[in-house]
Length: 441
Ligand SMILES: Cc1cc2nc3c(=O)[nH]c(=O)nc-3n(C[C@H](O)[C@H](O)[C@H](O)COP(=O)(O)OP(=O)(O)OC[C@H]3O[C@@H](n4cnc5c(N)ncnc54)[C@H](O)[C@@H]3O)c2cc1C
Image (tube, rainbow, N blue to C red):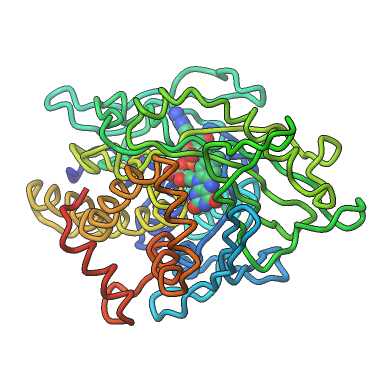
């Protein structure tokens, strides 16, 4: 970060998903001039399960995003784990550090809400503005802004490219992060990668279906059976049904591998797997072609900090651009929101430093803080993925481990990253202790 010069903003944020809108909100709240650019116009769809754990709800509360039920937010009280004919309901833990409930909201609506929230905090949002590449200082290669292309309603280039300058640019442009890639910060091949597909179903009672659109539990299926061919087959992967409370449910499945190479080697056809699983769901749920809303869409889940460094030479990486999805459960929204908050704090603090060196060190503290908070947890997550990518191990754990209440409590806290980092009960202390003794990812 350098002072002076003719900048268009104090900080430019590329991408207005949860990571970008959170960064923009927190930077604007600290009094910075923020330019938030997104190639889409809101509301826009984003492939996701739409599930928000208590960790994500806690971040929304910090941001001051209203989540009243009368405004269309649906709450859930825990996780229902289904494995074959058995199921267990695991309430979210009662903790000081997180709310006692989760939520779900379609990304079409959630992301629009978050972008509006950033605007209300003072950020300037430019929609249909695609960042084409970083702008570099000719002398030292430092990022000093972006080149951007305005798009028309069909997504075609509209006019000439524009240059926007700022002393710090935040890459919040999602899993592919063309911005980070253009800076040579490519995806690491030693981190887990998930792939998942999802669609929506109308499932209100008016359709004659047993409604799955209102459910006090986020439902996770550990065994997916394809019974269509007569002989039932166990499909690789895990499924979910997340009630959205608006007459629809988000239904999807995915799988995770310990490295991108192993993930592509599986060669799974996730769309076909979803169809096979859905054919085998109870007819009263109404998961039929007639009730399907929108296509089946899929995307990758970048996990365990699969891009690093998180800060270098004027560019900060947040959310999926930095591969912040949890290897334990595929959750990325909470971490995207958290990264935006921590990055904004470092950016605001850096402005108070008198020298270039001190400003650089302060910006770099963002990476240190994220690593200190999540590095150990992500390392455990990488080991977890190495275990569960062997279906036999997973089945033994489900059969013999999960039914024990103490194991269940431990698993819920570990997988949802909802434990007291300091204090708490012995489960909290074991998890927190483990995250501290393992090397940070
Ligand atoms: C199938 C699936 C299910 C999932 N389920 C869940 C779940 O239930 N709960 C959960 O917490 N997480 C879930 N995740 C993960 C979650 O979706 C991501 O972690 C989260 O969206 C990350 O937010 P982000 O802001 O970093 O990126 P994104 O949400 O991808 O936002 C990136 C933004 O950048 C914009 N952009 C991209 N390129 C440019 C450019 N060149 N110029 C301008 N703008 C640009 C895009 O338009 C977009 O708005 C799931 C992911 C998948 C694929």
